[in-house]
Picture (cartoon, protein in one colour):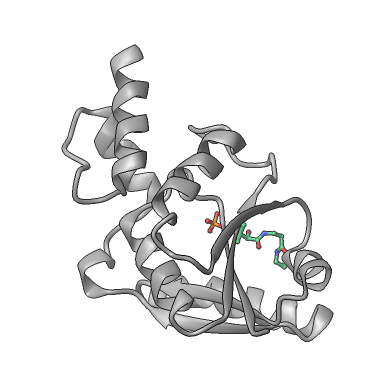
Length: 159
Ligand code: PNS
């Protein structure tokens, strides 16, 4: 079985993430969306909330599963028999860091990384910007899946 992983923080999942996941699901037998549990970053959403949003957003794809990882992504790949990491590239500014990670991951464990160019509709989109827009009451309906939009609306209605 050709299995790929789409790893990330997904805080929250955006339509850009979903576009990459959906396109990867057409290329591989199974796509594992792996939510990083690494506690080093400040998160708006808990690990459970991020995972729930992803499960709702990817329910339309029969071969996409949502899982989590803590530690190195290559260890997750070995444990789950995943051969390929799929990453979206929005702009050349993404490439520098992604190249380093891809080479490190290949050097550590021989795991390949495939880069998929982001749909130009989403090349400006990031979870950080979505949070900033939502924080100041901007419209995020065209930026995140409905499930995430509802969570963001609830979060800001409560604060
Ligand atoms: O959505 P993000 O925050 O850009 O996701 C980054 C993530 C979680 C995919 C990346 O930081 C990662 O793979 N972290 C796990 C640690 C690891 O394996 N790093 C790569 C080797 S240097």
